[in-house]
Length: 136
Image (cartoon, rainbow, N blue to C red):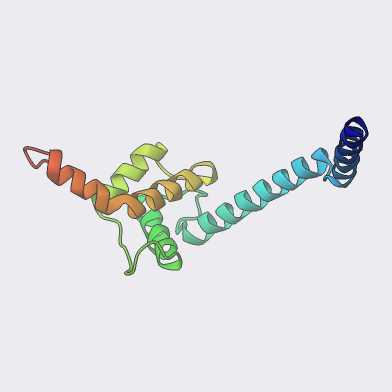
């Protein structure tokens, strides 16, 4: 009786796996969806650059990126009040991104800003605690 019950459980597991495999999305479909999503993201980033690039160069300088970041921050709920990046914050982002921002670096610049704003209080607290000479 135990062997029959064990065989029944094994058969049920095999049947469930077969159904799951038959109903699982094709891996190529998943890959295609990821590619389409990435292409849509890049297109959106390109439209953002086109909108904020006042000289239509296809890149954003520090001033143009600051305008984008300010608008982007207002559209997100990271903070309770609008945030305008300081000159030092913009210099940091521009340096981290390697200069003028193109489509390939805009995503990084926005993620840097988002992470910074979310953690700004913690960062400032650490500087107050460990920056003995209170340098910038």
